[in-house]
Image (cartoon, rainbow, N blue to C red; front, side, top):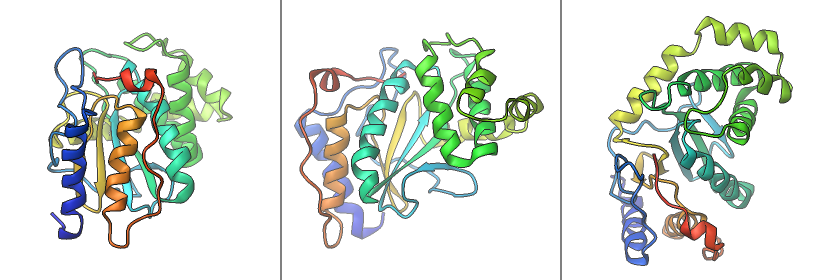
Length: 249
């Protein structure tokens, strides 16, 4: 581990546990406990492969492996937008989204993940996040989305539907989605959302649908521990709903 960031990453893990902000992920009991330590085999942000929201040079990157049919990912998607509204505007945090479709329980999620890639193929990272947001808005989760809605969603966000359909039907991104799934497993993911707070090549697991307060505490701990520190306000108190939200799938 990079010595400059060893202390901040340790602070994150210890602080979350002591504060009681760590939630065991998943009612199914299949997800890794958040704050369980440093993940291994995690690929750093790669511009040619990844989709990113925020400053690519941000000192902290939150890497999320997610499933578009996971109800906990749907909730965490809202939390991450709140995080980006605060830290993204300051250029301190960037969000890297990577597909981890759990096809054994959500048979539709691999095709939905391909659809998001086809959106990015037309409109870049902005279209990617716009598309995944739209899917989360309309899906009832737990494999409930009608796949016929995928081109409808593409049209609703301003994409060329014919081009989108040609991409989706071609299987252009099938291999990429499969590789992303395998990558998540190699990195230790056992459920979704599987989230990693990364500084350089160092990372700590924050899997499960962490509430806004826990995410703020983790990010602030890392930023304040960097050389020179970062000018951030202390973690805010969130709503009861935020504090009660937990788990992963």
